[in-house]
Amino acid sequence: MRADGELQSGYLVHLIGNELARVLRRLRLAEARKAHEINHIEISYNYEKVGQRFEPTAAGLLAALTSACGENPGAYTMEKQRQLMELGYEHGQFEAEVMIWIEGQEHLNNLVLGLVPLKPHRLRVFDSRFGIRLRYQGTLFDDIEELRLTPPTLGPCEVSIRGPGFGQAARFEAEMFIGPPLLGPYTPELLVRHPDFTIRLTPEGLRFESVGSIDEARHSLDEWAELLRALTLLSTKQATLAIAGNARIPSITLAADQPITGPYIAEIPLISEFADGWLRLLASAGLRSNVTFEFDEFWGANDARMAVDILLNPKPVAHFEFSLLRSTRHCLCQQACTSIQPHLRTPA
Image (cartoon, rainbow, N blue to C red):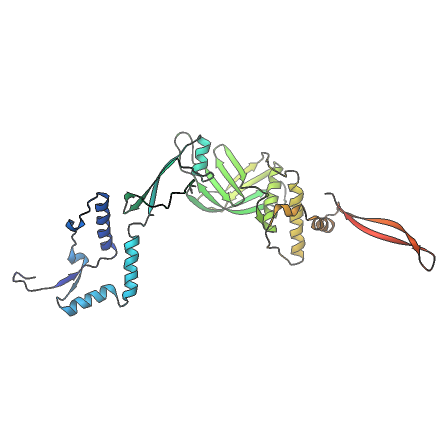
């Protein structure tokens, strides 16, 4: 205004985006300081810098408001409400302080790699907005008994397990993670995670571990064949394990020459051979199996095992046996009839 009070121009400071965030941050800071008399708090804006100038008339103000808010009041209200709820939470809403019991270096490595759950002895949760933390007062975390950390990911990778010679390899798509650096002489571990197994790489070597129980897993025939082939190759103690396909880590090839332990070690090579053979027969017939099933189904697949053995094995174990029974009846030609009963047998 002029000195005599005559209006010269108006400026509209639109409280949205960064300007709304300034107001919300000041309110948050006041709440953290328990300064609840917010009606006495002031905030200032450089209106020439952040404001929109308009002629000091009713028509000028209407044009400025229409330009700022748009022609759709409903959409504007929804966006304003979203910002009121979400501004300041761009990096997440909750932060927690947890007291845990560490049993040793191995346990700590497993925790930071997310391989074992973190069981808090004391958990304090904060609502963090604009980096200003307030103690969370709700009940959202009251029933939490354990947490699991997720280490930083390095992206996808490929795992190949090969045996000696030119036999068929086992190949898997997995994801690679890296654990945080720890104090002392320890270096970050690399973790390769697949739904069926994990591979841990340390300066001391490689550790291959299955996930869960093989009796409880459900897979398609293709997935079972790949997994059983990998376990069979590892059981030979002559396999090599390669990790490749990650843009941030060079390819790694290591000898997997240590024995593996677990159930069905003696039976897995035979079941693996059957699974690969059944896949060959399905491919020859132009078929594919997408049904998932448990490992137990292999024990009851005797007919399919015999078919694979007879059709694909040059010297099959399965064979036919015939029982010759002398009939007590005679034909019109007075010759004895012979009853033939075929049987298929294969080792259990």
